[in-house]
Image (cartoon, rainbow, N blue to C red; front, side, top):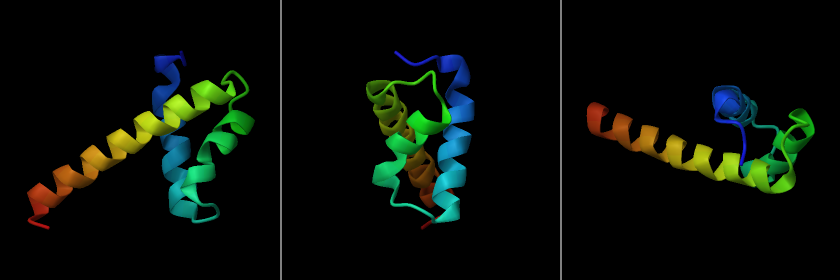
Length: 68
């Protein structure tokens, strides 16, 4: 399992990658694996899927707050 102490760093990387628009986000696990050598392929996928859940939760939160 990936190091949860680095989760913030991984999530920031994924946020930056998403905002850059340089790649389809379904390719993000490969980018994580290349950027963070401590992650193997499975861990990179786990980080990505957790980030998706986090991102979706945040999106739903703002929809409720902003009435979207």
